[in-house]
Image (spheres, rainbow, N blue to C red):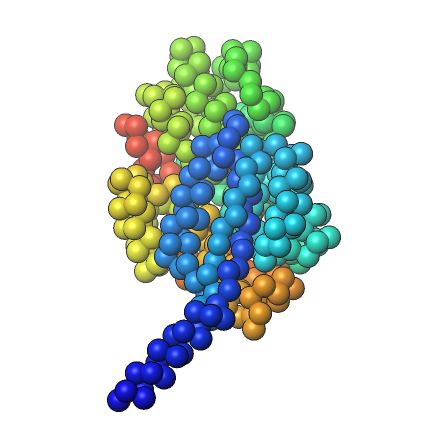
Length: 369
């Protein structure tokens, strides 16, 4: 018996001695205009790391965060810094505009990367090292158009943030499907990130008098626009994309946010897997009963995708092996559902439609691929 105990202790000691620290870099906007999204995503990644802090071989996973402030130049610098840190993989960037900066660099340096919520289809194009944890704009735009048509909204006004590749791509795909299936786009109106006065845009919207407004923009602009629209007596159904999945919208717009809808990746009231339920419970406990935003859910899934790929490699720091196994992910149990990633790097996933009602985000329906 003593010999067995000694042998067991020796094995534990050997595992501890030979276990390494594997670095996973994370590029997030922790400051700047879209810091709220970065902070939400970080919460999900941090919790996922707590739930699975080690690889199957005993190696510890260390997260290395770099703040890009949502800026393209800082994003490029962040990738180069993480490469110097010798990270084995990267989570990020967050927005499509910044991930388009990340993509060519990680391709050149051969760093496997998973972007949590970058939905622009070009992000992963012809790049075996660039992947994502979310659905892509062609699907999300189609979801928005289908929802509008199914609810009898025959004509619309589309509002685009011309500074965001995310917004441009989503609007383009919405209009393509919407018009192809009988919908009419009365006007296309443009804003730019950082705008605060939307009176001219809203006057054009009011004059067009659409059945429906499609506005795939981000929360800072939508919150101000919603308040100004209410002051002008504009009350039209509004649908955005996952860029509105932010509690700040309700805090800033207040009752003007009621009725705003958005397509999203996740709703904790419709947990699709056992891991989803476990994650939601732990998230509530860790973050004082905060509801789980889709950014946190996709951040967690980005982490789990990378860890799953590392576990399939003899050497979990082998970047090429990790990249290969990311695009060989099949029915991985994630927070947002079961994840399969083909060689395109684009998961095939469902979307949910949420609506803000009485100051709360309410699940409406799920739209499958």
